[in-house]
Image (cartoon, rainbow, N blue to C red):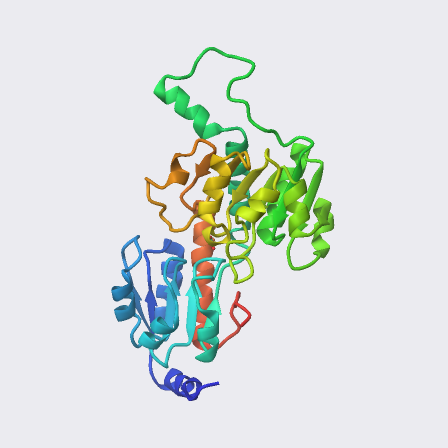
Length: 340
Ligand code: DGY
């Protein structure tokens, strides 16, 4: 631990804590922070816009703070930690994913990191299933015909999609969200649920999940769903080699992070019929430019990262991030701390 940790302890004893909140956040979390500020020596600087501050603004506003409350769009790297200064104790992100936080750089500075797992599981699993169905049953394409007048007479062959009944679903990363997706898909009459990842999971029995290698999952599944965190191991895991192993009829769904996919390879796979379709709630970059080829492929459904966009879920994420921040400032156990 650096000398800065001792400095931080003495500064906690003697001065007030300053925090920067990088976004307009749901009111219950604001109330929680304000209540804490009135009880303790806590000085909160709220960024009041719904949009993220620019990098320059961020670097400026974190200077001298003890806590940073951020979202997944703020890159928390060595440069930012340096700009904040040695007194920084805690980075609390209002997201379950923390690939935007350089955890190693935080460890080096003894800065604790909090995130928000659990509270967004249901919302994200719901959205994953919605996206899978919308992609497999071609809902956006079908809706477009209603709007543009190309809705013709009923035909036995028109707008045919793929169903879930008797299908094999492959979940890559059977964590909380992957389990939520598997539980939701079981009642659709799927035959098998496969999963791949670092190792077998005891809880997989609840959904009859079968642990297989990544390659086997790709080869056998009708639906391949990416629910894994973005790490060095999973970056661009879904590349041309992976798509090539999938069935020509496979539907690929990603609600984790855009970085797990090589998008040029996905585009090629969709254009050449290597796989049937893809549903993406996450892309690189975000927002994806409207003229990006993936946006215009009829067999690709792109959503603007709305996995957790559900009112109560966002309140729960925001309040959990606030509780993490407050606990971290006091040096207490955080409700959800990233294991460093
Ligand atoms: C998260 O919390 O990481 C989600 O991607 C936000 O929707």
